[in-house]
Length: 478
Image (cartoon, rainbow, N blue to C red; front, side):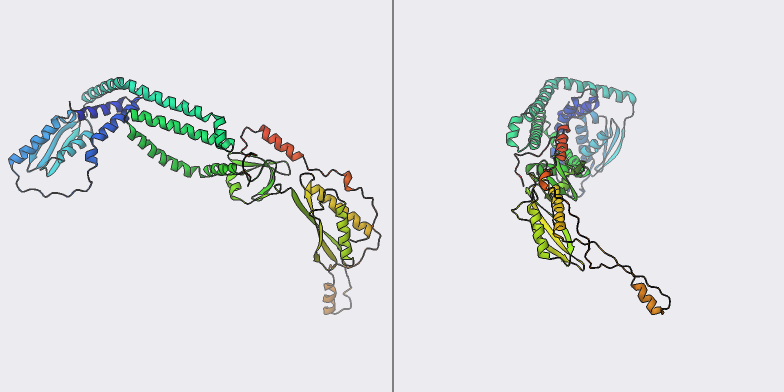
């Protein structure tokens, strides 16, 4: 039996027994590659050929030569020996029964390659005899089993290489002390470990397939993996985007734990940065999860990075009061408030001049590391209110005048004018009563230290979570 016949039989036998033995999959790959190697010369030929003209010298001797040549080729192939060949005027007619449609196509292809053949007509049929097909399948299984037994040591070595590469890659991925030196944080270290693991497994797989002479299978697997990866990438695009954003945020942290930030219209104190989202604790104590892709693409306002933070509020005084005196009193009041910094110094400016009042804009600075911004701002408002009460500076309230006139005895125009006078308008009048004097308790007796409730919530959030925090003091800060 020729080598081509053996390869063809072996390929079919392996495909028939792959459900019984798992390792026959690799055996099928080996024989598939060998078969492909035999046909490389034919497949590498140009697909476009110039049709040769049919020769005029057609005789019985030529037809006999063609028939003899085709029958000689078929006699060397076990699956094609039963074909009857007839040639007339260079037209070849093939008849008989074969085991499969693939054998029929192979016979037609071989006959058409013989020189001098003008056309090949097929009268071939697939043999449906149960006995013959059963006998052939048993023979294929038997031959395939023998091939598997003879090749078992080679497959065992390939399996050992693949398993050893898996455990070696896993051992490399668990060398945390080495990975932590290469990576800026634990998240990147884990990423490096997984890449090393994958490279080790891929190297072992390539070695095993090379040992089995099935490297073509590896290229096929890589092509299929690329197509599948592209499809999966489109399907989980948001997840991949969040993961990449997590890597970029972990490389250069734009904020730290307990920083008070604003992202995409949301504000809160940073609790942790995970591989999917940034966790914030709002001022109400609620947990807020923002996807890292949004965090990376959004404008981030960090209120904690600069320890000095400015507060401001407006105060209205009567238009009859001395503006300069009111500014001086507000400045003196701010100077006595604990927590308001002298450098930068607080300022009091005129922001608006109305019909019945003047609006002053008051600004001051607080060191957030020692004092709470909102507490100091509240104390500043209280202190200025008390100072203005003592100085007799009036902060006017809106006063409305309601004019009602009788429409009796008036003409229609006068009646309309009197109705138009029914309006509300501010009235520039000073309240005649003396402001009530209240003792000033002073800001020293108040607790103006920063709030610790949110910090306790953040610490609890970090301790209760099983996810790694990607924020690290060792990573460069943006």
